[in-house]
Image 1: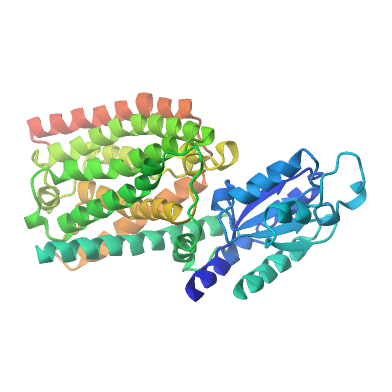
Image 2: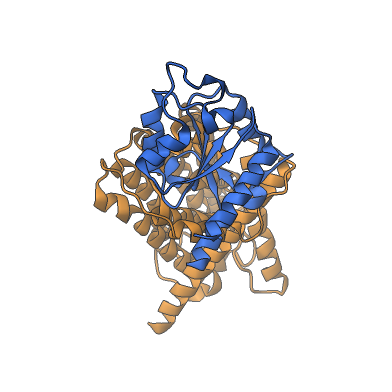
Length: 146
Length: 314
């Protein structure tokens, strides 16, 4: 069990979900893969399918259209997994709050299908790559306590 | 009997360890080419351990038996191929007739099982990936068999790995014009068989979301990754055995040169992967059928002419 958790912390694979972001956070997420930040040092990889993922990097406001899709993607992710809500929009719908096309916030949307979901919040518009690395490290620390 | 079981277990476990080590070399060299630091040395092993501990999900549309059985058979086939190849390399006197054909069949099974698993998963992305994998298989198998035929012809028409290795004690197949063509074509075919970048269209990450592996998670995915890592260790070994004299035990430098050739071929695969863009399926087919297959046929003709005239350099 300890070995499994250690391996999980050392090898977090990220799937990137866009629920209606303005592409600003998405660019910052991709920045993590570049030589300057190189998140593969910690064994993190960007993967193409939620089935392979351990971390869902969610950006965007979570519109009504995206809401059921986000829930579906969360249920398709192999557990245990961590959700990173990246950016002001993903945290609390940002400046779009109370707009007509909003669903619920990302954390409420995911908690509607799994009340025990692990959700990390990365505020900022967009958050700096350093903040995302910090959130990933804290997520690893959180997984240690499971 | 007991010795065979021990050899099988040691070869399978050793190839797995070696394959994961090569996987790390691959990722580290890729990172260095891109001016990054790259993952620590134990990263591929950690990935496998992590995937083994994760949930194994099966989509509602999947056919359970084929979906779950495919990765197991892929790993099993590569393990058997590993046992035969290492045995033929280390004890060339004790191989059985036709083991070269058996190895070629066994090394084809992971690709077949990838297609089976992808088709059984019931996902449209996986179906597209399986179709591409099938076209890829059809394009690279013919030139690969033709270049292996060159080596078979030049070593006295024997289909035993041990016979091929011992016949190359004086001069390896690659010390001739047909041998050089055969090795170059063989390296490109191996790149396609490994599914590395110019030919990774079956699991194109951006277009079809990892294609054939899109529905696999947890232990099943880990088994596919292990099978691929073992292939990364086995296919360069096959090239060294068939074209480059295998483990030449006649002198002390035989072992050193074997390690050098082996590492060179693995490093070449990584460098090709890092310096090429992904080819479309029609470009891949055209490259293999109209570029490499004629080259392989020329190599076969040269080898046959060399045998009939007694010219070993041809």
